Amino acid sequence: MSDRPWQKVNGIVEHGHQVASGSALNSPYPAGTIEMQMPFFQALGLDLSGYFPGTINVSISPHTFQLINPEFTFRQVEWTDRHPPENFSFSQCRILFQGSAYDSWIYYPHPETKKRNFQAPSTLEIISLLIPNIKFGDRVEIEYDPSQVCIA
Image (cartoon, rainbow, N blue to C red; front, side, top):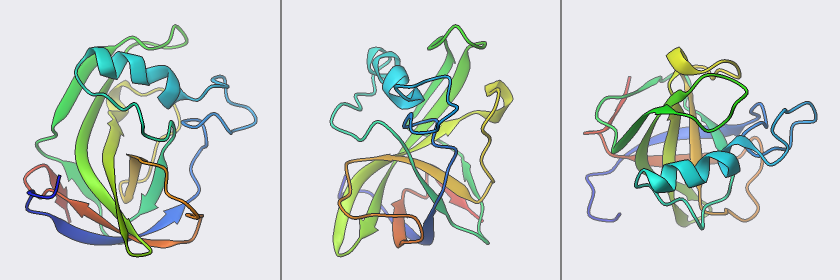
């Protein structure tokens, strides 16, 4: 991933809905949505094995983001029988934290096909390698590919 034309944006790790990781007490998906979705993404060409099966939510406020040319877009993924199929897009990124860079993916469940647990337009949901000691409130930098992601 090092040969990309990275740009950086600052962010703060924030609380999410905790459904992606399965740690929400009232989640209908005890294993977490990411763990359930990973085999579908792998069958479509994106191997997320080795990544933490949850998301890190990073607020880049006051900035917002838009995926303009994501590396992967999967349409009508039927990963559960609890609601209709969803569309997902992914763009490679890196999280910079405490002097280390962690290979990651911006994970974007398209709101028009998502049933609940929406994010603010200033919140990036990121699937990452396990990052030791990261916690809510930590400051991070996100390196992203400006040909795929527009930060406004």
